[in-house]
Length: 295
Image (cartoon, rainbow, N blue to C red; front, side, top):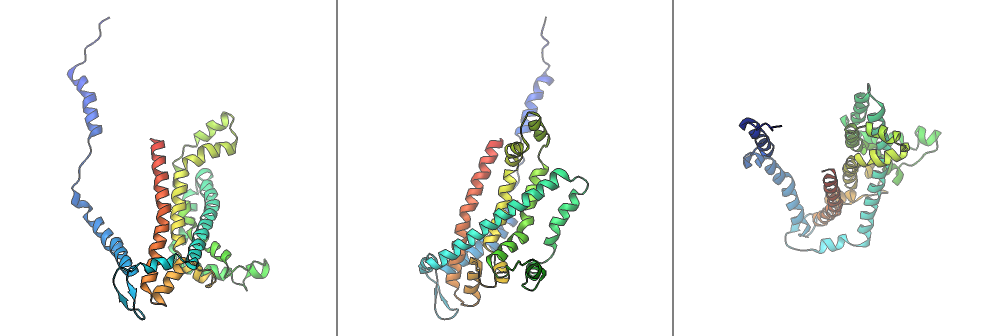
């Protein structure tokens, strides 16, 4: 039986399709100028000022002599301030764990079991962001007041303690975790769970091996979005901790506002950013590994 020869049009079709797939549009580089300018003015500029401050020497109250003095950084590594760094990172980590424990079930319930009222539930999660962060923190202080119904009727008196700070952290930053996890769960194919259970997998095993693995990038992203602002928190320890449980942000604020010691405050800020960079690098490595695994 003779094999029909391909016409030139049919033979050229795969080559044209490959050219279309390999074609990548090219854009002029000057289109990135606005974003680069914004980045330089509002990120690199303040960073340069912080570095210059941290290497300066304080002369008198609020007077600086610019130079290259690294003594501020050696003061940051003393036991007192290392303890404050440790307290901040531990509390931020604990708050992140609580946010994961509370936020993941909420996002899972919204994505899996809600259909008609899914957007309404998402709106209720986002609504607290429509009010001021400061107002929300003061509202929580009223709820935790020693003369309020929690302390009076239930005997829960935690205001001005580390527990009040932990509650404030989770309450204020919980939506930042729920949103990326909800987005990951929304993109998931739930028939994979049904297939796993049909093949004999228990519900928890199917959740651990399928749901959790597929939504892990969203969990890591949400945890990082929660952890980073928690470490730099200033308002919550100040209002709910009452000055009894200070974070690094409170110490930095005191150095700039009260002590007028800009060099040491800048050194503390750079130390905090250096500590957070470790977690950002870990996130990048995890994200890169997930992309390679997905590919």
